[in-house]
Amino acid sequence: MTTLAVLGVSLAPVGSYAASGTAPTITSPSSAQVRPGYGLYFTITTTASPFAVVTESGTLPPGLSFQAFYNGTAMIQGITPPSARGSYTVTITASNGVAPDAVQQLVISFVTTTTTTTLSASPNPSLAHQATSFTVKVTPVPNGGTVDVNGAQVNLPGCVAVPVNTVTGSATCSTTYFPGGNYIVQAHYSGYGAFFPSYSNMVNQVVNAPGYWLATSNGHVYGLASAPSLGGLTTTATTGPVVGIAGTPDGQGYWVATANGGVSAFGDAKFYGDLPGLGKHVSDVVAIASTFDGKGYYMVGADGGFFTFGDAKFYGSLPGINVHTQHVVGMVASPAGTGYLLVGWDGGVFTFGTVHFYGSLPGLNIHVTNIRGSLLSSTGMGYVLVGSDGGAFIFGSGVNFYGSVPAQGIHVNNVVGIALTPDDGGYWMAGADGGVYGFGNAQVQPVPIGLPGNVPVAAIAGA
Image (cartoon, rainbow, N blue to C red; front, side):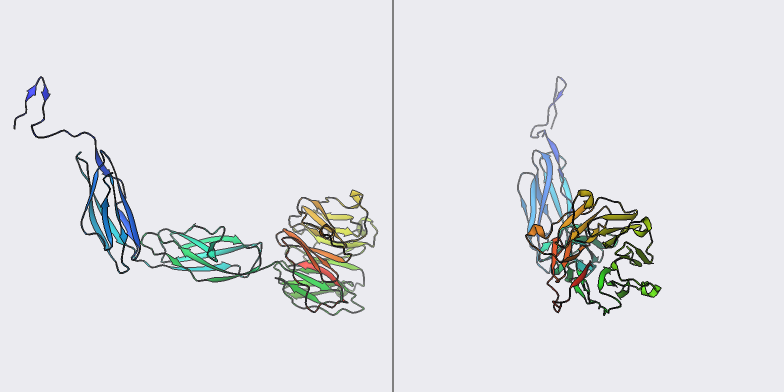
């Protein structure tokens, strides 16, 4: 065949043509993985102008077939048998008349690595309104994938699609339960690449409602919800009645104080001394409060005199500043252990150390004589006073107002104290009859069985 040149222009040989456009390129991955007994829907994609025609040659895995769509794409799809194993290599070719064709070796392999997933929770039991942490472990260590932790087939907030660490095979997350109760939880590993998905063991997560103790005037102590009942004491004419109870930081123990300044320790509460042990004879102790670390406690008398034990530090007293009264009803220690406040029956507040003064009822021209207790927020930036009618007075920014007994249309005159929930999300008020009123997230338990009707509750403390 001869090519003619006319005026410098080359003419194509007779019987051939010059195609225009772009040569095809295969843009989809060169490997795919499928689990035996599962489906594969793998799309082959190309770029080309005009569209390329995609073809396949070679033996496909059992259950899979090839289909071209003549728009530059094709699909390998189907359901593989559970017995399928191994890897298959097929050749994918894309052609559109523009050289060169695109050729790809596509490897389809079956996933065959079985995984084991385990789940643990900490703490268990846990408290409502406090975080519960979950640790998920996948073995052998996969090269990717995520885990979900779910209860009753619902994924737990904060525990959805948590990446698995490709060095340790672990994933951690946390969630917060609100109502107390028993929760069955399980983790699911998604699988990744050659690693099969798997479900973990089931864990029974026990969530206890925040609890409280009620101490009666004659020395009985009742633990409610998460607060354990660890025993009480016998009061006498010498000890006087029980006047206060204070819990340890972990909620596994408490101290009970009597009017003569005697202290009894229960559970993991340690005894650091009391007034009879020091040879002091008093009968007007009104309250006890523990230090933040539980390694000491304070007691205060009706005159505002202070007594410290263990690592409790003395920062002053009312007699020490020439304030004379017999109407102090309670005290609260600073969370940092650097001070405390006293409250009188008229709502007067006296602060010592680093505790800030945020106001008092006399300062607001509110005249009462029925204040029965006080609370300091966990941040130390505010406090609550409570009256015998269940009225709550909030000072500072660290405590929220969650309600009061009068606001509920209830008329009482026997509230003896108040206790804060662990997360500052609510408070309980206790009546002398054992009735407890809950506000915010404070869950109220039934009146203790066996509580004598003629023996008043003297104090409440949160666990």
